[in-house]
Each structure stands twice: as C-alpha cells, then as structure tokens.
Length: 431
Ligand code: SF4
Image (tube, rainbow, N blue to C red):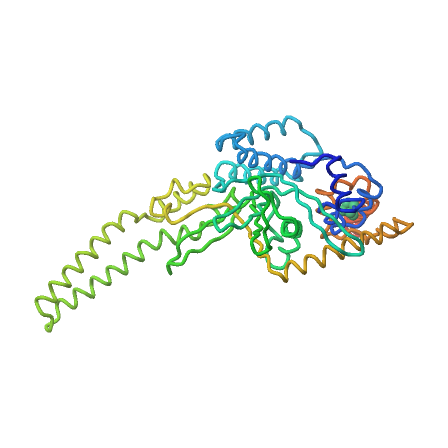
C-alpha cells in the first residue's frame, strides 16, 4: 500500500523531520554524485523507464499479483507473454535493449521463471511501508516499501526482494553493499515492529531474515558420486547447457558402475573356486553373484551408446529441459528458485549503519554548499562505469560528463579510423 502525500506529511510531523529519505536517494548518490545533483537538486524530470525498469516492474507486479490471489499460477506466464507482445508493439526506442542478444536472453530467463517459479508456502504480504531512523549530523528518517514479507516456520519475519538484475555483486563482501536497502528495512522493523494480522509484533534483528529471489537464475542441485548434494546457480534460459559436463558424467557413470560390479563378480567367482572355500561359503558367494547380476541387469537399461548420449544431451540442451533424458538422470536433479540470503550479524548491521550515516552526512553537507556544481562534482567517466551511464542512467541526456565521454570516444574512433601513413601511401598508389 503506497502512502499518500498527506500521510507522509503526518509521518514527518510525528518524527520531527522536514523530509523523508528513500533508499534510492542514497544509492543514487553512491552511484554518482552528479546524478544525485541532477535528480534531487536540479530536480530534472527523469526520462522515464528503460527496458530494465520496465520489465523489472512487470515482473514484480506478476509475482505480487499471484500472491494477492489476483491471478492464478498459470496466468503469470500468459500475462508475461502478453506484456512482451505489448512491449514489442510499443517499439519505444527508450525501452530497447542494448543488443538483440541481450533482449532475447533477458526475456527467456524471465519466461522460464514465470513457467517454473516455486512459490513461497507462507502467507505473503506485499508493498507494506516501513520506516527506519538513523542519527547522524541530523535525524534521518527513511521511508520505503518491502516487495514481500512473510513469517517462516520458525517465526522469523522474512523480507523477500525480487531482483531481475544480474547476480554479479550478490556474493562475498559486495553482497552487503547490495543488501543495504534491505538492511535499512530490517533495522526499521527492529525499531518499530510490524503489524501482523492486525496485531503489532516486535522483531529483534535476530528474528529478521533478508533474502533475494534472483529471477533470472535458478539453483540446480544434484547428487554427486560421493553422495553429497551439490548446488550450482545457472541462468534459467540455459540451465541444462550449464550442466552438460555433469550430464555426460551421469551417463558415463553407468558403464563404470557396471565395470565395478563385474569385477566384484569375478572376485567372488575366484573365491568360489578356491580350495579352502566350504560348500556353505560357495553358496553365499553364489547368492551374492546373483544379486550383483540383477543390479547389472537393471543398470544395463540405462546404458546408451555415445551417439545416443550426444543426441539426447543436445535435445535436452535445446529444449532446456531434462524430459528427453532417461528417468535415472531426471531424478538426480532439482531446479529451485535462486535465493540469496544475507546474514544479519551485529557487525554487518553496525557497518551498514555507519556507511549509511556517512553517506547521509555527506549529502547533507554538500546540499548546504552554495556552489552545488562544485559540491557534487565528479571525475570523468571511466570505461568501467560507461555501461551504467549508457544503459541505465536516466539523466545521461542532461549530463555534461556523459557528453564529454561520448565526444572523447567519437574522437578516438575517428582517429582510429584514420589510415596509417603506409596505408595512405598504398591507397594513393605510392607505396
Ligand atoms: S551519465 Fe553517468 S556520470 Fe552522468 S549523471 Fe548519469 S551516472 Fe552520472
């Protein structure tokens, strides 16, 4: 439920502040101080959606509509396909992907999600408002909305966030930076409690879990030779291709298992033939051999020649499904949502708090400077940042740094297109 301007004013008054902070404000500043200036100081209107925000909002809406019983499970994929068609018809240059390949991959991943998503088996609430208070140079009050939340079987409040972005950065140390928004919300919940079924309940931080559902990916688990379960993350559109080597090993494993059992039989036969073997022992060995022969017989049903194996794996890869493969292989694999959980230790929460307060203090100091251009100035765009600037930043058309970057690149390209002295002489027939 989105709060109205009047409701937000009531919150400000109650909290004794003249403005509320959103996570997007600090992440904008963290991304690029100039972007912050253009958006929040100069108040330049954004050029609206890009392809990622367009499909991101759509994906959120579909899964949340399912949890709110507005649509059935099977309707998620049909509605998604309708929206893809609608988007194609719009043919809006602002909503285009950087390449056709990127477009196809992105859409195929989401298509797989809406066909196969494993939904949460708990009562989910969506888009509930949350407030969090931080004390720095000033009192900072954050206001935001949780994508989804639910109580798990252990009574933990789980904050679930849907992500349609790539998973890069969602691991190791970087994960905590990515998770700042949810950490802020967790802090907010620990400060103010949560209304559950009409009753206000308190949740200390150790009873709050935060997790991401990375829509473009899935977790594939399979049993290894050593009996241990291995889980790997794969892009949904090609999860079978991601496992081709493992699938080959599964097929090869059958003949290896048969070989091992045959050796076992040979060993038992040798024992049977030994002089010291008593008739009772021979009888036991014979029973053992019979049992192993039975095992070999059933394993032989799963024995395929290399050509068959290659054909089956190729078909499975093309279809991105194991249904073309024998049951013994299908049964080894499970495909689940790609959840990434963030552990909320005191240390992590304290570190996040410090970083958030430091960013907020920085913005506050700079916002009070007379020369805002100087205060929010930044260095020139490096190649490593250019993807964000070119594809995600909605202010690039108003950005002098991006203009300079493009001009510099154009000059560089013109220069590199110039023929060398030798090439020029050759072109003129003087070489
Ligand atoms: S285009 Fe790049 S440098 Fe310019 S405002 Fe956007 S993020 Fe900042």
